[in-house]
Structures are given as structure tokens and as C-alpha cells.
Length: 529
Ligand SMILES: [Zn+2]
Image 1 (cartoon, rainbow, N blue to C red):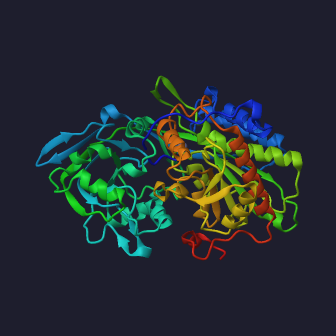
Image 2 (cartoon, rainbow, N blue to C red; image 1 turned 90 degrees about the vertical axis):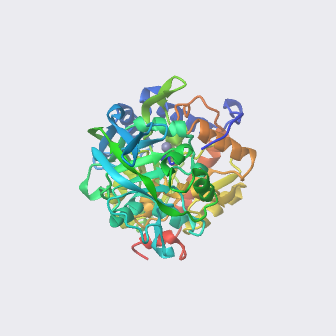
């Protein structure tokens, strides 16, 4: 999953190993073990390790009798611009009355390079609350402010008055970018909201040395005139707010309660110097079709998507430099490969076709799926739904299924019809402030009108399982320890894979194509309704 931002500690679930695990769980695990092996070097987009992983997936598709559906066999090559910060030649200073306070990069904040930075930027800072514009709610943090040529400082998240999906949608880079550009903002400083930080600050800080990427296609450029993107460590926010009459304690307490935030100019200007090393890389999406059997419906495709890329080789943590990405997201790719193999073995008649889409560049900002959704290898209107699998975390038995997008389309009814008879309770996203519905590849299908779901092993708030999941995020998410030496519940993985398979079969066979619910915010993207 794409990182936004965490906290906690103690003992983990135990592993259900060979003795009592069903065969499917072991087959799934062997695929995870292959993809998350050190030899694949963390499958970074553009790397040799990613290429090996893509070759493996294509080989598995072929073995499962799937038809190639890329532009080059099973592959759809995607081009990326890659950027790395040269931090020794970069700096951030807060300038007040001509006096410069040099910030410590990695400690006070960091310079992100997903936005291609200008060599130097010097501009006044304005605190704009959540930095959010939501036209439907007549909510605008920029209203009445002259932001031209200025840098917007805001806390990630949104006030509770704005429903979760709207808040998530307008926080996406593509949507926020439009409003920043309209306001004339030249750069942003995002204060990570402590309540929504999946990862502790020190690990966020280390990630600044990973290459950032954008798609290398003019029609898919989303830079919105931005010259600088900075992230602020909430623990050091007071340095930024000095002299403004506001404190970090005040701002973060309001943000925690999702209350309205004040807007005010900061007393400092920000002076940034940035050196970046730029290069171009290419990595393929891997695409395959299992043809449907119904003469009409076979021209409709149920998309099954998962991202193959992870973070590659990076800064060492406890001496380990390889970010293997076993759960993120070798696990989801392994699930789809398992489904392909099971369908090959049992050969059920599916009325619609299945389109397996294994993508690159997810960790860089959902880029491979963005490219695929803009340039699908089937007709766009033929994609009837997307089921995305990303980091479903089988860390404890599958008793509850969390379904992102549950209330948005009639896929929600279908998932209940499949899971509930298996004794699994279905729930919607218990933590909407983490923005998960827009943080993985389904979002690019949603933006093209395709009803979508993402599923994960769920838990009740405040339960021991919730603590295990939280601890996993704190310790292993986007860390080298998300590798094959971690406790995983194979039975839970096998049960999860069964749910996804049954759901895929049910959607492929239902009479009508899936539809957005009439009250769903995301229905606006549907072209045919
Ligand atoms: Zn991730």
C-alpha cells in the first residue's frame, strides 16, 4: 500500500504452519516466498528485481492457461521519470526578519521529490488548516486568502463535517493539485497528522532517500505548477509556527478531534534549495485474460488487480537494506496467482471474462494502475468492476472481513452474499481517516467509473487483533522486516483467497453488471449511468 503515514508494541500471533494448514495456504505462501525473496531485491519499479518478478508472474499466468493481454505478450511497458534527492546540496531555512533558521532535514521536515522541485524557492508561508476544498460542501480552506506565489502549510486529514469518501477524494494529489494551482500556490508543506500516521516519523524520514517517480507521459502529468513539496514532522511543528500566536499543541489537538482549524499567515518565509538526480526507468504491468463462456457477457471483464512493486533496496534498518514487501504486496499477487491456478484446475464456467492486472509503480503513487486505467488493453467500457488485493494482512483468523467501498456499489451486497454463509462478518472501513479507499490501485478504476472493492482481514476496534494489526504497521509496514521471516496465519490467507475467488465467480456470473449505489459519491465518475 502507498504510504501516508503510526505508533505501539508487543507479542504477535503465532504461525499456523504445515501441520494444520490447508494445501492452498502453503501454495500461496510459496509464491509469497518467491516474490519476497532477497534475490528479487524488493521489486522496486524500474529494477532488475521487479523485472524478475514480472517474468515470474507472466510464467505463472501462462501455466494457468491465461491469454496474454498486454501490449507485448503479457506485458504492458510503462515509462517513469525517477528522481532522487541529493540532500548534501539541499537545504530548508525559515527566514524571519532576514535571519535564517536552518532546518534539520529528516528531523524538522523533509523535502519530497514526487513533485519535481525547482532549484530554489523562497516564498511566504500561510497556514491553511487542512488545505482542503470540497465544492459539494461549500468548504474551502483557501477562501478569502491571497495565496498567489505563497507556500501552503496544512495538516493532512479533514474536518468531521465532511463525509469520509469526499474528504479522501479531495485529499488526493490529483484533486488537491487543481485547487492549489487555481489559488496560485507554488509549494506545499504537509504536517503529518499524528492520528493517521501508519509509520513512525523516523521511518518516514528514512524514506526520503527512495527514488520518487511520475509517469513519463505528458497527458498524465499532474504537477499543477508546484515547485516544492515538503513534509513537516508534527513533533517539530512549533519551529514553524513560532510567532504566529498558535502552537503545535493547539493545532494537533484540533486535528485529532477533526475539528475546524484556524487559518493564519506564518511569520517566516521558507527558503529552499534542492538538488535532484533525475533518470528514466521502465517497468511493465502484467496483464492476462481468462475468457468467459457467455456469448454476450464474455466481452465484459471483471478486473482483478494487485501491485507487484515494492520499495527495493534502501536505507538499512537493523542492518537489513532489502525492503522485501512480503505482505505489501507479494501477498496480493500470490492471491491472484492462486485464483488463476484454481480456476485452471477446476475449470468452472464463468460467464464474464476475468482480466488479471498486476501493476508497477503503486508505491510511487498508484502509477502503473493509473497508466492502465488511462490505456486499458480492453475497451474501457468493458471493465465492469475491479476487485483489488493489497496487503490484506492475514495475521489472525479471518472472522471479520473489512471491505473498502462496501457502501458504494452493489458489489457490497455480493460480498455479503459470499462471505456471510462462510461465517465471516462483513464490515466497512473502521478507520476512514487513513484514506485507504484512495490509497491503492482500485482508485484509478474508480476514477474511470468502474465500481471497485478492496478487501482485508478485519478486526473489531480495541480488540487484541486490532493491537496486532497496529503493531504490524508500526514495526513492519514499509520496513525491511516485512519479509518472509514473520508470523502469518496461513489458514486465514487460504480463507481469504476463497472469499476473493467466490466473489470473483459471483460477479462474473451475475446477470447485470455491477452498479454504483445511487447515493454513492463515486457514482459521478460512471459514464454509462
Ligand atoms: Zn506499500
